[in-house]
Length: 218
Image (cartoon, rainbow, N blue to C red; front, side, top):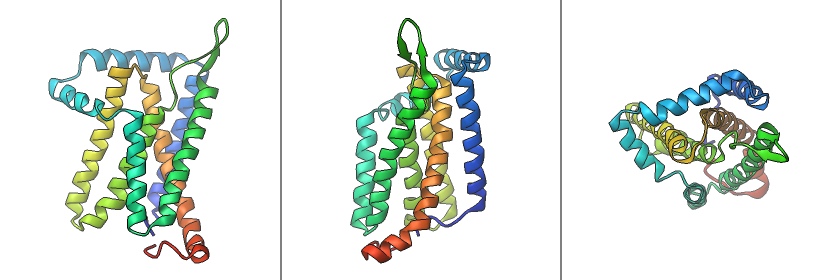
C-alpha cells in the first residue's frame, strides 16, 4: 500500500472537515467575522511581511499558476506509471478531476450572490492551492519516505513542504487578491480530500489489482 492506516490522521480528517464546514457557513452568510479576518489578513500581508519572507513569497509566486499545477499532477502520474503503480496513477488523476468539480460546486454555492444580477466572489476554496496541497502531500508522504529512511530528513522535508505551501498561499493573497478565507478553505478541503481519497484507495486498490492484474508493487 502507498500509505498505512493512521487513526490520528483519520481524526484530523474529521477535524479539518468540521473546520471547513464552519468556514463555509461564515462565507455563505457573509458574517462579520469573515470580513474582519480577511481585511486584517490583507492589511498584514501587504504591509507587515518581513523582507526575508517577502523574498520567499516572490519565489513561491512563480509556482502559483494552474498550468504548473497541472504539469505537477501529470508528472506524478507519469512517475506512478513508471514504477508500476498504475492504479495509483489513475486514482490520482481521477481524484484531482473530481476535486475540481467539487471545488467548483462548493465555490458556486458559497460565493454566488445577487447584485443587479448573479455575481460570484473569490473562489472558496482556492482550487490552485488545493491542487498544490495534493501534489506536495504525495511528495512528502509517499515519495520522500521511499527515498530516505532517516526520519530527521523526512521531517525536515515535510516542514519545508508545509512552509512552501504557506508561502504560496501568501503569494496568492498578495499577487492575486485572494482572501484568507479562500486559502484556509484550500487547507481544510485539501487535507480532507487527501485523506478521503487515500482511505478509499486503500479500501479498493487490492481488489482492483486482483481484477486488473496490475500495480504489482502495492
